[in-house]
Image (cartoon, rainbow over all chains, first blue to last red; front, top):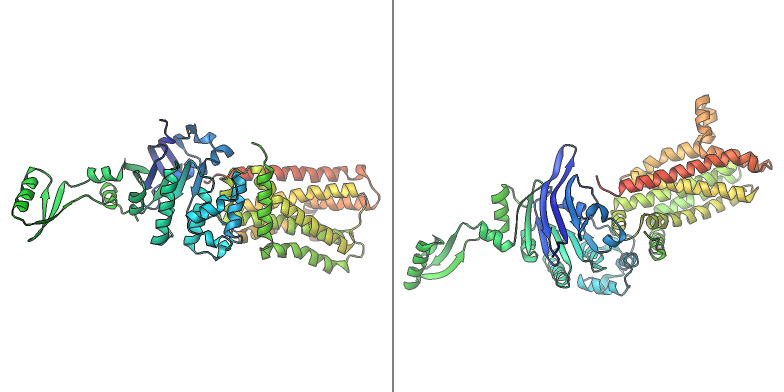
Length: 281
Length: 236
């Protein structure tokens, strides 16, 4: 199956710095793919290139099988949805008026407004002026606008950065539903919990380079220190994940001293620090 | 790429809803009318004073309103969102310009009626005003696209107002043949020359070079406007 996004040796250079330094990855239909990295690592630059807001310096970038340079037309833009940290909402208009404009631009029925506002938990606020909304509510309106036309491919740049845990959960549920309905999602975030909870695969990006790409589970296994922590009646003990460790566990069970077993897998944040020497924040 | 009337109308409707709640735009529409009321008693059949409110309407309500609207869209990142929707360049630019054009026309006509603007050869006058309207809207769009914030657009726009509207009035008094010669190439100065010729019962032959000058300025401003828009559609 042809990937929806195919990026090969992509670079973006500015006068005195390379924002992207030969990154390569593929995203297949139906995936939620996470781009995890700290501020300034190249996440937003990648999204801007993939959404044809920014020209790249070199490399091959294909979306829906076509070179990105040829993708800037109504047909392509009608197939993608974009959510960035800048809301881009008309502050003097109501939520409804903002979404009505985009219904007309995308040629979709007005009834869809009610559906998306229900999905982002804002149906009761649709006549409220955008300037009266909190930052989190604006972010939800922006998401509603991004999914209004049921895009095949959705780009989310830090989608829940301004949200409280309850609304973050709402957005995550909406994104999962959208993904189940067939939308491929490209998510950039520096929130490892969000990446782990939503993404099927993750790429770690740092200083314009991709350091690792895999499923969250595989990344943790690959970077595990192969030890197991045992909670016993005498306290906690760490053993190797080998024959000697197995013998020790068997012995503790036989003596009735073993209370719990925990495999020592690192968090995605720990792995990022291992790979780059930097924190995700 | 086809032009969609539905998308165009949606943008015009949005502009209307936004503009009527924007005090800055309402002020820019009211100012030329206020100036016309001030100039009404001073005109005394002087063409320069009589035509001043019309030029003010073109620059303030036309160029400044347009630059404010375009720049605010840039500042709030809404222009980027429009550009990333299926709306075409023509739909966005024409949708944004139609409301300003209509508003400017209304303000201009009211101002002209207040100062008793003489209407000789209506067709020529309408053509000159139409060209000037397109030109000032293009200036406004260019200023809006080049400015980072709405306040910056006022700072960049002020020299345009001074050069194009005040230039013809003050250049002769400031002295210097070179300055007068430069100002003579301005479309606003050519507008005054043409108006003067028309009031003296001149026809096409008397105003053809003035018309050509205004048409060339209009075409050039449109080209610069489109080039600027296309350059600004990508981030750096």
